[in-house]
Image (cartoon, rainbow, N blue to C red):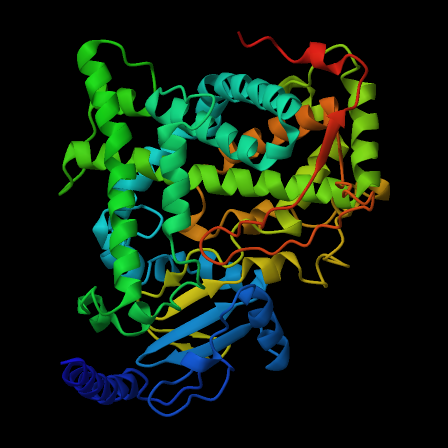
Length: 511
């Protein structure tokens, strides 16, 4: 039986390849050159050339240097993949030609197997992207963030400080809980439990269930017909089906909770309650489905990126203590030692602003972003980029471009400081970190506020240092970052102690 199935699949793949090659020839009738890249192999093209095994963004950056081009090309069976390795080409294509470059590829594994097709992040234009984006953008425009969301941020950062004081070794869990608590209150009006909250745990389960590979590198993305493969024979199918149940629950469970509380008259103000009460309309999309999708994507995307950025901040502080000390001197001069920093202090804390920028640049929270897709043929610098090409922006390479950010591996906030005569510092990494064109992150102002408030309060109260082992030796962090939509750092130790005498008295009582 297994032999017959294997033979049938091989036959289908050969026929598929032959017809695909013919279509590729017809799509480039003038024989224009593709961007530089490795030479395709027989039948499978450049499948073996796609980097795997982690830190793929580094391998793609090295390929860019090898082929002396910031645009590199892969032929993957019947499809084309183009990787952009500089801000210039990303701006030229994803920003200036956003009409062509703002769609998403099919992504069979994520959308059809795991069930992310409702998510605005991977949604194609014809699937209702514009309607979803409009709702999310209205809920997170700067005026709304300032008036409605900042009080929630302040409350949860206060709880974060208390948790760091009580159990400092669990700092990574506390950061994730804080991010989850802010998102859940703003989105659903739900106050998370101090420990082991079911919705925070669900978000973690969804994150851990995903296949953390380079975008479009999964076997089902390369051979979509394999989505019909029997689960009993293929482990990836069983894993996808298990993840699908979690994704379904993440989309539906908190939304149903809000509806029940509304009916009982106990619902707190939130994005979900506001949308349900006033209603939303979009052609071809049922109102409740639209609201459910928009709130779930905030829940799904907001936690991972925020907690990853803050964990990177902790790592930077223990690796560069001189940066931490300078930031704390600035805080003492501006804020003093009798209160916590507030948003009103932000204009007077320029070095802290540079630290936030360097956190975004030093380790991208989404090293390869989410792939774009072309909606029509294009020619760039004499190179042919066909309709339907998957376009990956190597955000890490852009943020580590030595011509823009000298010594890119060094955490150096001074690179963003104004120079003599008021000259500008290095380009703001937010220009890259939050995406391009019509796919730029609509929650970028919200995320910036959360990270800033957490960073300045942590630095004001605590001192962060490398852990000391049982043998009294300093434990040097050995950190790797995961592949996938969010680049999450692996665990590392951090010694957290009070910096100010009596600093615990500054933390508001939360009883």
